[in-house]
Length: 611
Ligand code: M6R
Image (cartoon, rainbow, N blue to C red; front, side, top):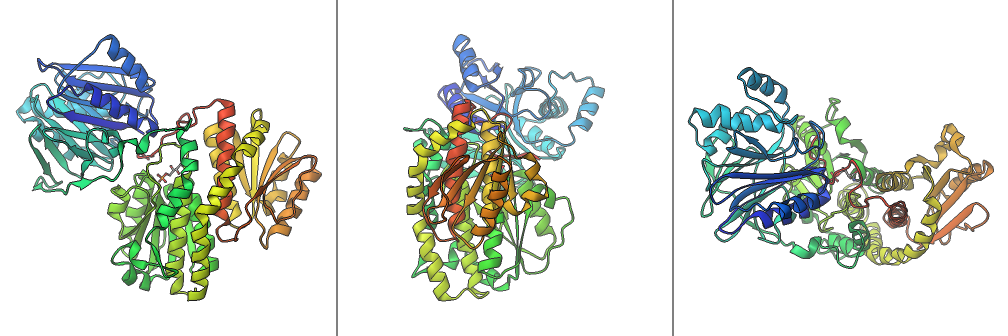
């Protein structure tokens, strides 16, 4: 999704803006641009379709410098990824704007502005904002701050904005509603960004703007106004992230790095949350006991990989904790007038905490008035955590690769903690909790062991390089694990992949099976093993090529058309976490063989902040 960086300083801000854009590249984008006010207070702009590197090349050929500036990476929504649609957008060589989000009433604004004779140079919704600020407000006598405040009142939809003007060259104005925006606090300088990662080389002190805030930054001062226009104070928070937390280090890709970071990320997610073999309820927030006491059922809402984590958790909630649990894709939930019973715990799951559909679904759920909310999220200061009653942070650290890996396994770890605390009130005995905690505490070490399969999976992946389709099979919790495996493979290798519960094969998908169709099965040693084996026989009988990730004790043997990879033998409850790892490695290596852009697959963005 789009990224914003801005700065106001005594020094030249162009290098800061460029470094910020590079650090936002992981979010996905298809053009980049920046604008600065130069020493004569003229607006200078450079924009390029494609990568930030193209913008850098353009800037080394024709450098621009200034002490106030804004920059942007654009992920095309309204209009193609061309130079003219790239941000910043400028009106009358005077005001420049960068914008994340979508303005829903842009058609109406455009019609009104056309009627007044304004001319457009792009197809974007953003251009209506810059016309509104300059033509409709500054031209009528408002200063830059007042013009932005007046403009945002008329915007419907989501926005994070950075605005500069040559008539007000010592100011940078920013505003947010529905799209994230942080202010970085320096010494005699301020910065803005859509993500703290962009600013880590220049500051670790951040202010997280709230919905409807507008901020007025000069080099020496900062004023924030809330949605009513009242001046407010917002706390400065110190980020624990270091600038090199987002460096690649010894790895070839972020996804690879993040796969190998999983033992640490899982251990960090458990750290300090278990004492005397019991999960500490306060880890979820100070109101946790009071809220958990009332909960009779759980509704999980999420998208993509986080949705798959929710599906696995639903098996745990019902089988371990005896709590009814339903899981829904956020984009469906938000529009279907769902019925939520009193005493439902609405659990949203999101790595980024900024996924537009998940946020909107949570708002919908809260509007029903009956529910309590809990967010399982990886970003402490995200919109989702701010909107939720209770929070359990996954401590995966920044996830840069678009394909979620450590985000997923830490979500599962966190969700299992939740199952245990809620389950305590619904029949999980202290003895059973102790047993399960013991298994959880072994997960990091088991993941470490499974990562040793890397080389054998790399060799296996060579058999997938020329494939166009793949089928993933599992039963029980291994069905959502298979769904996640299929999502990973399609997302980064562009191989069409589907997942089925193995028992569904003969209800349709078996028709697809032939010698060209690789079939990947996940087979832990559990009570469904014999059923799964029968399903796999159905595949073999039709000439399908099987690749089985199996518990070492499940009794599978490699033979013609059957390749078996032994996975650590483990307890069935934690099996979904462990079995996800080889599937991540498989899709990673297949993508490398296919030469795709592993960390930034085509058409996708890291945080889907628009609907
Ligand atoms: O940040 P979120 O967890 O809310 O993101 C949800 C999905 O967009 C995300 O999981 C997506 O499916 C990933 N690219 C999958 O690898």
